[in-house]
Length: 315
Image (tube, rainbow, N blue to C red; front, side):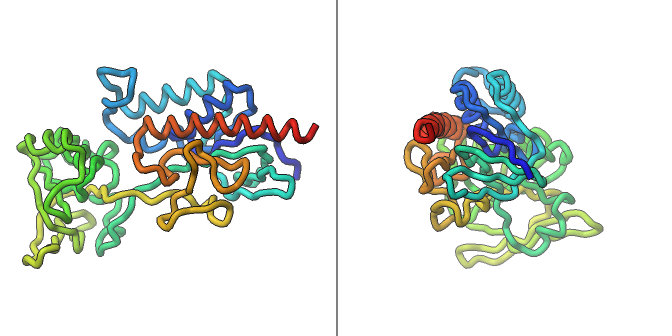
């Protein structure tokens, strides 16, 4: 089987991957982006982005993802949508072999920007009612709950922001958090507490998601401080309790931390020469669009330097 040659292969087309593709393509490297779905990453499911520089009035996540995609393509990056990478292998000559849907590609350098996916609660009823009342995307499913009652599980920025978004549709939003205070940014908390459609349930966890006739009817809430359980009637459950890094391609290839995030230095280098990483799949602390894009740019810059040195060494 013949293999297509690539200078820089970018795996993942979220903000980190698209920024990497932009910088790599502008550096005149043959750059191919492999994306298992549509470009944009998790940002495309975000209703409104108001903290990305250059857009003082904000814009939707879908719009920002589309702009990033078009900009990378206009500078020469090739974006292969619905093209998941099944395996990345380090070859004896220091290059990387990628397998995607039966096709093989050989890249001088690889940038992993595979992102992260929402964590599940792992409680009874969660799997059974997924798509029938259980969701991880308020932007996707919020409109289905007009004038209904929903709950949001979590206490970070994502959970609180999604709870506020759901008040556009739901008559009541119950915010369930395992502690007695939120982890969300203070300004976001202030907006949440000022919203009279949101009701807090402190020191509570979801023990079970209850349903009837194929749809969610409530959640059974356990206490983290020894109080009695109770059932909260709701029509929908939105879960935002953290994310899981999509780092399976890196397993056995480069170093990961104990949580499965790819370990990188401040320029995006992994433990393997020529292999870089950026965005939510890395062990970086702040996971925002702007930091993913910045890390993508750094990784691409270093990848360009790497392929230049590799070219010199082979002459």
